[in-house]
Amino acid sequence: MRTAQATAVAVTTLLGLGAASVAAGRYASDVALKVPSAQPLPGDPRLTVHATGPDRVTLTRDLASLRPGTYGIEGRGLHAVVGPVLDRAPHTADTVVRRLERVELGVLAPGARVRLTPQLHRGTPTGALGLAHEDTEIPGELGPLPAWLVHAPRATWVIALHGLGTTREHPLNVVPFYHRRKVPVLIPAYRGDEGAPPAPDGLSHLGDSEWRDVDAAIRYAVRRGAAKVVLHGWGTGASMALRAALASGVRDRISGIVLDSPVLDWEVAFHNLAAARHVPGPLLPLAVRAAQGRTGVHDDLLAAASAPGALDVPVLLLHGPEDTLAPWEPSVELAARHPGLVTLQTVRDAPHASLWNADPTRYEEGLRRFLTPLL
Image (cartoon, rainbow, N blue to C red):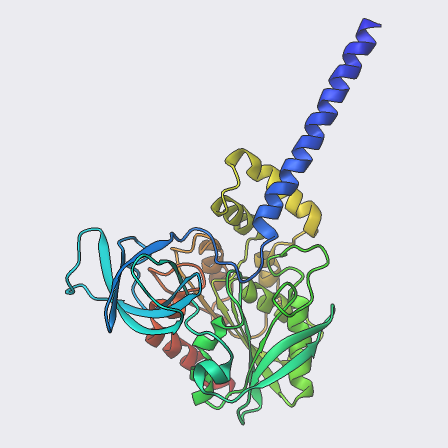
């Protein structure tokens, strides 16, 4: 009887621990994946505005506020755009002065708490850029997907796909570049975005299921007159673009792909995302297993793209070693496996999906060289 009781206690304890582990893993995976797409990515610190002037703003001194290039800064009810660091402007040892390009929303005042963001613009292409656009809907697998279409005369279209931590406003950074070259740009929302259908499980799949909305966008572009499309994606949007190029039923319409900071290793990216969102270290293995159980099996995107004949269109791959979400090394390996087909442009001193911001001139020159033969 004592043996039976001891066994029952042990089994009950193990079951309890198992249930607790499942619950802990589910909670941790929620923290990483059950987040609105527009919520800023974790990792970048909040900075304090210390002073402002007609053409400058003084921020807390940090590696983030010292980044080269042009960025948005966002706070509660606030959006502004800052340019380069002004090294010669007077400042204290714990502050940095940047050029203030413009304030698009709210009032930039001392004491405001802000984060840097790659999104420079607020609003639609018409409101933000002065470029006429059409509000349209793409018939998607889960329902209609709102999209902006900036018309232009060429028959090759660009489909621009934002990633985690941003919205459809992020691709507006490069819309003027494409518009100067008379290239139509379609900017869709996808499952989980504001105004788009939610994912059935309420979770981001880091591009593994969202790519089917890219397939729908390609089909829509073709119906509207596109002879070919170029897919331009950031982060998980880049992963979606690559998956569409490998698996879409209309992949023959894709003439090129621009991959900015692609997520090529799902497990590592999820681990980094969960850690950055402060999932405790001991829970990370449970979170990975729980996420895989809830979102399905994730194949090796790098291996899939490296299979013989799988990738048959030119790729411009932009990535940098400072990316703490999507590792840079798989991008280096993808380029090495496809010499002549994949062009890797390394961008340093830039966080995830902020490569245009770090050096817009170099970024757009790489785009120009890549795009010209495709038109």
